[in-house]
Image 1 (spheres, rainbow, N blue to C red):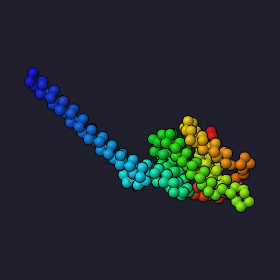
Image 2 (cartoon, rainbow, N blue to C red):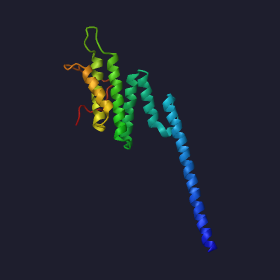
Image 3 (cartoon, helix red, strand yellow):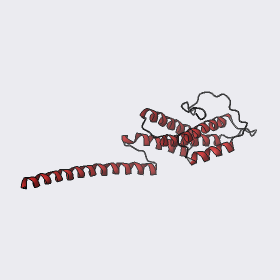
Image 4 (spheres, helix red, strand yellow):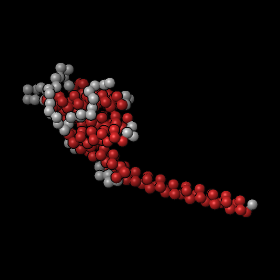
Length: 183
């Protein structure tokens, strides 16, 4: 009987030890996640290599905030490529990336909006067309994304119905991985 109680105590002690180790690991992970979240909130650089995707996303976001739209779109495009390689990025996250690409292209078009004669500049037309494609992709991946629906309707309200997009040379803002139109 005494041996039986000793075995039960040993098993209980082992379970307690495993629980304490697990709790310590989770506390460490929570501390790291809180540090990353704080860096995101304050706009600081994320230095933890385990959060490279989040670091790139934050970098692209803050480039857009600082009106560096071209580089923001490039970084978001790189995120999409990384997401395709990984294969474990959800369609919701990819939809948000497309949404942010559309936002940056839309804003880029707005700052170069009109020629002296009142017509839209070619760069603005091109940015609007690419933004439309990005919003459509976002909606294809997450049909309930109301912000993308709203911004797409704003974009349709801004662009003229008879807008013709002239041929354009390859630039840093072209989104070669965005298919044209919905499937």
